[in-house]
Length: 402
Image (cartoon, rainbow, N blue to C red; front, side, top):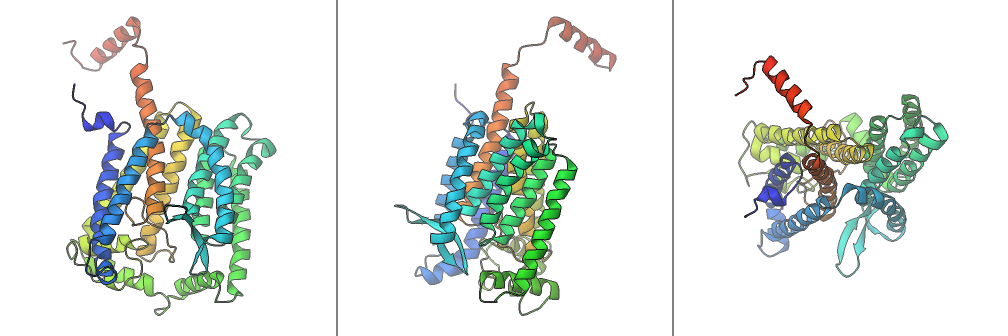
């Protein structure tokens, strides 16, 4: 018997469809935003970056398919290994990583000669490991030493290692971890205490930023904060150009491939791809993108609700929180609600590491969804008495026996 597409792609069908739609938006936006750059750098070959992005997208979808076939119990066991791998990778990146704009965020993968952003992997590893820790300590979750303290240490380690090179990623990861702890039934007084520590650390950090040399990476953070607060026209070049792109899009946009700001806006294919999409597709395109991420949130939340085990539920919640928060921060930066952060739009922005990690996150969610579907199919049929009672209840609510 011939198998259909959704017999091969198991798990939540709605999530698969959303990923494919976001992929279409991604290909169109990347081609539009990189055409001029590719023409200048590669002797008129405007499709260079598009083809490269398409290859990464196919590889990422392959990884997503492979991960969704892995049982979630195996993923939970691997979380500890991923965490202990993330720590030395971050340390190595700080010392021997590729330095760009006073920040070392990437390392070069041997043999492949490709750059890899280790903080993206570390975020994935931490949320996986944190979900596993919270699930394994549900019996002692109210105990400070046996429960909460064991959860906080990994969070502080990873965030502290990411912070020097990528403040926004460290902050978003810290926020995501707090949300996951709340979902995992950690006491609110512990969570508020952790938030208090975070606020004190943030205040101390801002103080250091304000008195630091502007030539360092801290100086970059300082200028971004000051420009955002003061609304300095000269210092807010990126944000202003993004807002121009969005404002000029109108309701239906200028049309695909007709963006003007792609030639002015820095990193239009990654950090500000949402602005390019809105410029070309207008408010209608923006609503579609936002709606897709909201549906994604709803579908993943439904998986969490259906799960009858703590481990997989928290695993899905962790992946969902990480992805959706990043998506809405990216969009908030584009419209000027937040200062420039450099966060990509999951499944849409160009970038091999971002696309790969997003695919792994979605593969994990689909793995849990697939397991729930299999458990439902393998569940024993109801007893005759239960069937009879169900029929009686249906008849009482107006259903005919026929």
